[in-house]
Each structure stands twice: as structure tokens, then as C-alpha cells.
Image 1 (cartoon, rainbow, N blue to C red):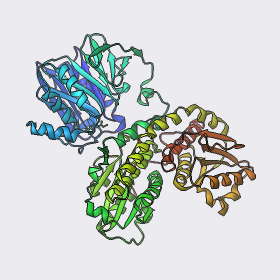
Image 2: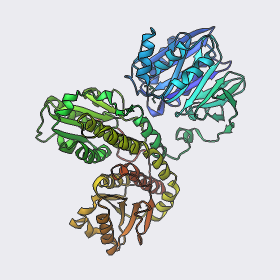
Image 3: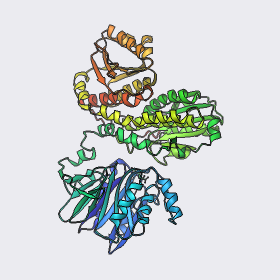
Image 4: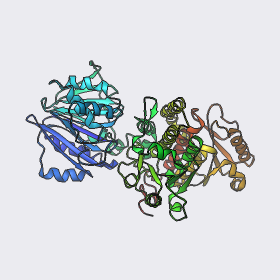
Length: 602
Ligand code: HGA
């Protein structure tokens, strides 16, 4: 997510903050800004685009002062423009923010009636004005009064030019760390930003508020002073970038619960799903007669799961198409057709071209993508953003699971607006979805088991992945992940199709990963598993305690969730299988050969 860097000490703050921001830039950001305080004056500079643009402008505009805050933004609310870049200011107060304020619209309306004028479209600016509205000369007490009014996730770094040299830090569901020097202190969202300055850190906990000066640091919870342990971090800079994980892909696999929580944030308000950015009128939603999902690669697999959701809850005939195929075939489209492009980067060339063509033929376009104001988002009539944060590993993981959640939310929203699900039914579905991040955390604890599995299985030249219904696309995704990063040949199949061909391949040299979690078709999956074992195939089952099969070679137990949401859980074992096998083989996990992260060519 966004990068935060702060400094208070005796040296010039600006170069230290800029250097810290540069150390986070590898993740890809859309704008940046720095504020310093000198002689009770606020000096600020912000720039859209890469950090080098801010750096270029800083070359001719010095920001004096030995205390300051900086930010690299990855937009969630408002386009990546200079106005929306952080820091955001109100009077003597400046702040940077990482996270999402769910109730920002309500707060904004209230502040507007009090006369506050907003310069940006961000949720962050609301925090600055809110603190200002509660300020009577004491920044600490104003922040303490503002915090209970904020709903959502936020790490904040705040300055007040009336109190130069003091930084207020707040952490709630987004990371924030304090770094300690000699007569100087540092604050950052992530260790790599300040690892060249110090190795002594405090990792703030949720609800912590810290007051940091050059000489001192005091942490409070609800106004009561608390102690937190100072830890020494011995990671290399490269390990720190990956949060101590060996690869970005592994880090991103572990980020999935957080990414999912952020994607759900603010979408369910007062018993209703609120997806404001979809921008379809009630009439337009009622008039939809057909839906087509278009996507490539992993996003195509997410779209396939989306078809099951959409047909089940909206009863609208839905097809899924590979964008590069869709472009070059005859399409039957009119204004009652809804086209849903799905893309992590929002720049996928084939998906963008498919979108443009469908739009020119009169279709309504609602895209699902992860990058604010990307080409696909701009070309669409409405957008549902996933909040996975920047994904660096070429093999998609957290973007995929957040796409699944977005497709589920979009489906429930359409069903709500078309009155096909009532508020009680929606409430049940949303609470099941909200429980998924906790269930994911259970699966993530098992990572080491998959590492041991990889030791035994990395030499097999072929794998088969089988699943049915919602988990058929997960079989395809599991096979794709293994191919992409370990270069092992793998096929994904609908388990019922096995008899129609791939069964000929099965012998003792063919591991078959079978997704066998509880479902309406569970007995049929078990029959398919028997067919494999009867031909000496090695079955590796992904199952729950209640479906764990006997006599298979290996079983990975996952927590039981509803069948329709099980893809969000079941995909994690397949990600781990691919990751650990690739790692064991010594493959370049994050940058597999011949592949690019964002496919911007046809
Ligand atoms: N919601 C804020 C901060 C976004 C963020 O934390 N991204 O990682 C914004 O859109 O500016």
C-alpha cells in the first residue's frame, strides 16, 4: 500500500525522507509529496507520477527544516493527481495516510457544512480537516478526539507547525513503525524505507498513538502510556523489501487476508451494499439481459468463478470470454448487455481492446481492476476497484482472490438492486465473505507443510488439477500457477471431464491435485478420485476435516466455508504448491522466464 516516511532530528529532513521514499518505490506508486516544518512554517511539494518527478521539482525548490513527513501514494480514493497526492493540509496541520476511511463521505458532508473547502477527492483530506475542526492549540488532544470518529484502516503521520519537531503517529489496521537514532528518530510504513538509518525499531500495534520528537518517544493507547519492545532487525535490505519473506510472491500470498479486508471495506453500509463507483442507474440494472465477462490469464479464471455467482443470484445469462478471442469473433451486443472486463493492472491490451469494441457497440461496461485510473478503469462506465495494493510477483495471487471477492460483491449488489435477494439474505452472504480473511489466515499458517511436500514432489514432470463447479476454475488456476513459476507441465480439468481424455495419462508418475471440499458435487468428486487411484495415480487432496479422503497420498486440510466462497480458500494451497515447488527447484519465482507482469501488447 502507500509508503510513509517521517523524520525528526537535527539533519535536513527532506533528503532523508526522499531517500526513504525511493527505497519503497520498487512497488510502483502514482504520486508523491513531502512536507517539512521550518521556523513554524509549512513547506510542501507534491507531484503526480513517479518519484523522479517530485525529485526533479525538489531540485529547484528546497524544503528547509529538520522535521518532516513524506508519502508515495497508491490511489484508492480519487485519481492519481497532484491535488490528491499527500500530504494533505488544514491550517497548521499536515498529514499523510495509508489506508481507507470508510465513512469519509459522511464526515466530508459534515465538515463542508462547517465551512471546510476540499481541494482533493481523497478520503485522507477529511482526516486533516477533522483534526483541524477539533484543534484548540493542542495537536495531541485534537488527534485523540478525531480518532474515534474514523472508521476503516489508517496509519497516519501528522505534523503541526505550531509544534515543530513533534510528529504524531497513529496506527489502525495499516502498518507503521518507529526507528530510533541518536538524537533523531524516524517513522515509516515499512522497514526498507529507513533500514539504512537504523536497525532499532518499534512495531506499533493497532490503536497505538505515538508522539515522537528527536529525543523522545511516548506511545499511548486510549490516552494511557504503554511500553512497546524495541526490536533489532538484522534483515538485509533485499529481505526487508519482502517483509522478511524469500520472494515477493510469498509475501503477497500472505497479504491476502489484508487485501481482502481492504477490498470489502466501506462496501456494506447500514445493511446495504453500496458500490457508488459502478454508476449504473436502477433502471439500467433492471434492464440487463446478458452479461459477458472478458479477461486474460488468472483474471479469466476469476471471471469464470464470477459466471457461477452471477447466474446463481441474478439469473442473467452470463458468458465468459478470453479477451483475445472475444475481440475477433462476432458479438451479439446491445444496450441491455453488460460487459465486465477483469484485469489486475487495468492495462491488459486484449482486455482493453475487447472493452472498447463492446462499448462502441452499445454495451454498458463495469470493470474490476486493481489500479486506480488505469486505461481500463477510464474507458469503463463504472469501476469496482480491488484493494490488493501493488502486486510485484509476476504470478498473480492477492489480485486473484480480491477479484473473486469483487465479483461476489458485484453479484450481490446487482441482486440487491434487482430485488432478487432481500436484505437478510445479503447480510448473511456479506458476513460469510467477511469471515474469509480469518479462514485464509488458518491456511497461511501451514506454509511449511507445503515446503516439505515440494521436496517430495518437485521431480514429477506433469501434474493434473481437478475441481468441479466453483472449483473448476481453481483447478485451472492451480495448473497455471505451477506452469508459470516452476515450468512443470500441468493441466487443469473439470473433474467430470477426466474420463473424456486425460484419464489416459494417469499412472504412478502423475500427481493429481483434487479439490474435494464440501459441495453439492462432493460425491462425484470422490468418485473421480477413486478413478485416479484405481489407475495408480497419486491423489493430493485439498479437503476439509469433514471431507478428508482416506488412502490418498497427501491431504491438505483447509477450513470449511460455504461452497461458493471456497475458491478463495482453496486457491491458497495451489499457490503454495506452485510456490514451494518452484522455490525448491531454484526457479526465479518473482520473474519467471518469458512472462511480464502487465501484458500491454496483443
Ligand atoms: N485512501 C488514501 C490512501 C491510499 C492508500 O493507502 N493506498 O495504499 C488515498 O487514496 O489517497
